[in-house]
Image (cartoon, rainbow, N blue to C red):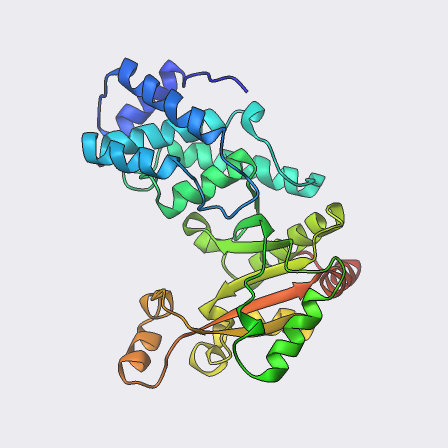
Length: 306
């Protein structure tokens, strides 16, 4: 995998959208260094695990500022838009390859048109699109899908006894253990797709991945929006847990949610939280492979179109 700098046209477009004019020889050396680090990263890990790339960008921000660093971050993404730099770490079915091609168009558009701050180093958009472009994550329509998630074992030691038994049952399902699962993460650029129809399309993509990767055990996600409290507090979001739970998924309590996302995204939840009537809880949702594949394929055969 050889390094090739961004084109003159791409350099000009980035200068225009970011409003900076860095010395080309400096930027090219920095992009080459970032590329060298990036190609050495381990891909069978979570999307936010970027190794030495994190201190590289933190140092660059401290030395040359946010805009210069974002120029380098966007340039790195532009380099990884090239097909030769996509190295998926799982088998990728055609339907997912087609989705990836659409995501590349979106990413290229955002790189050269969205204003400064969107792709600042180590931002949500940067982490997730970088994971997509290097093959560490797959496209999930409403977000990205980590390819080699290992389940957190907390449900074995936390919560009621019945929760521990149910989690152990998942661990004892072939292939034994906590690995590997496809895990969905919401993407800030794709929030307009975050609805029931978008979720169904995501499930279809995950099922295609499960069928192509026989040693994967299923689908998982961890969030405050799998919390059963939402059925009363935010009923419009209850489909996120209710739908998979109705067709074979299981839900495990992990404790209080400390991300702040639940109250940041809703005035109603924020008010209830302030009144002491709502404390967000974090839950892990696990949808084992067999029931997930069986249900989604049945849905499709009955003219469903996720």
